[in-house]
Amino acid sequence: GIDQLEDLLRRTEEDRKQRVEEMLAVFSEKLLGVAHVSPGEVERWVDLETVKANQTNVDNRKAAEDLVSRLRVQSLERHKTRRTEWAEGMLRWRQFRHRYAVSVVKTRIASEEFVHPGELKDVFTRVR
Image (cartoon, rainbow, N blue to C red; front, side):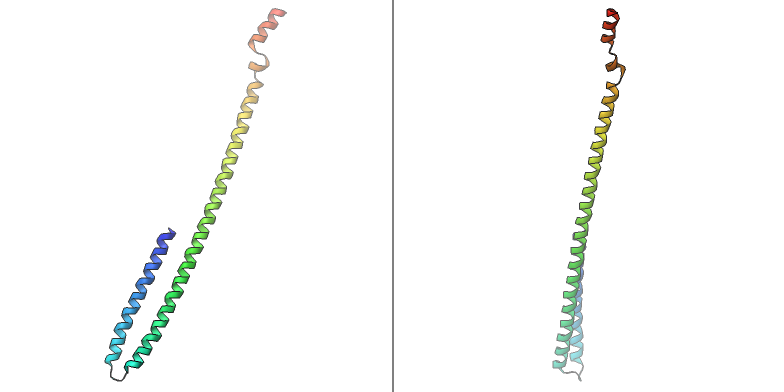
């Protein structure tokens, strides 16, 4: 889930940073091989590009952290909603069970078994 995404984003950014560093190293070597470019100019250019790459790295990490944070909040909110829905469903189920049990008892109490019990009929028959 979210942890795997966070790990993937971190690894991707580390890989991107490594590739940029490798490309800058290769490019600076090639520039130094060109006779009309001084080593000082190459170093300044590499420094400038390194600063840009580092800023991109920082921006990407902030964006990834923000994304992961929002996903975690959203996941927690969804969990809270599902938990509330489950609790409400359990309450409805218990109320239904209660109403059903009460109706069964009322029906039995209203039946012949309790209204005119057999022993009471026998007593009344003998008394008459």
